[in-house]
Amino acid sequence: QVQLMESGGGLVQAGGSLQLSCASSGNLFILGAMGWHRQAPGKQRELVATITRGGTIKLADSVKGRFTISRDNAKNTVYMQMTDLKPEDTAVYYCRSCSNAECSSGYWGMGTQVTVSS
Image 1 (tube, rainbow, N blue to C red):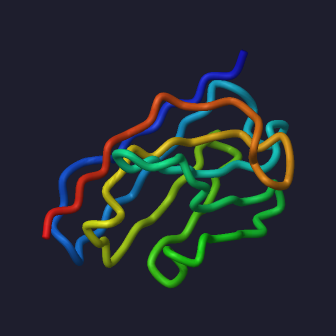
Image 2 (image 1 turned 180 degrees about the horizontal axis):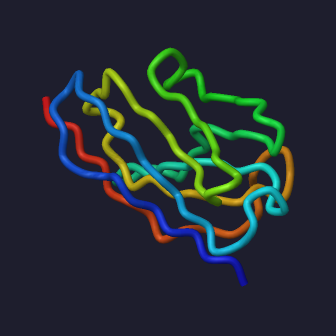
């Protein structure tokens, strides 16, 4: 059983930045692709970003140009750098290992809250 632990969430003003981290108890290279999802109050959880083992990145249209995802396989850690944050980015952000291209299955972390004030 792999455990994923997110950190780095918090309260930030609109236009600010945050970096989220996701530490894996398992070998990140073996896990393969990784993703970040988010769930805002009253909304479905949505996929925000994915990164393959080799570093290929996909971002949701809503965060393109503002968020990026990266990974350090040696540290078994995935990051998401978030800039120009908006109130609509407020959500719980979850790290996930992606068992398929859609990242619709895999291990979940417990999540970290990001709140963006206007």
